Length: 151
Image: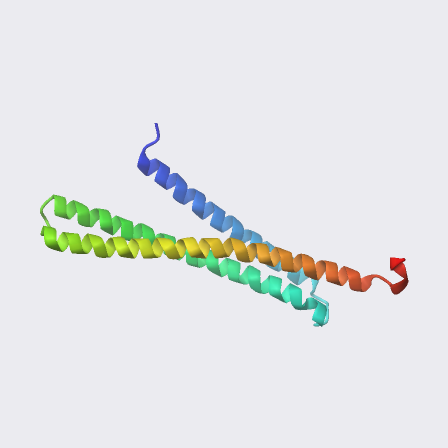
């Protein structure tokens, strides 16, 4: 049977793989968008593409911030466990220990909440980038249709 620490490690590994997958996908989308427009002149139909590029760039940034906050959460949780152990072993007075544990727990929860927000926005921005790219693609296709080609 899998222990709690093994499940926790699997969960962290899954979160990191998901984050890196989205970051790599957004990077690939950015590269593809650049290759598709390397010879294009800047024009109004490229506004959705600019939005897509911005969304994908922000998605990568949110992924980086997610990883930062995840690391801070893990570090705070380590500190929390260490403080609790020191109180139990009598290496820290209980009144100081309770204050330390409360402070560290608040920090861990704050980092965890921020990590969750960055993870959520990483995915949202990635999807918004895809939608904006598709709008750009359909718009530019529409502009290439001859006026007589629609009948």
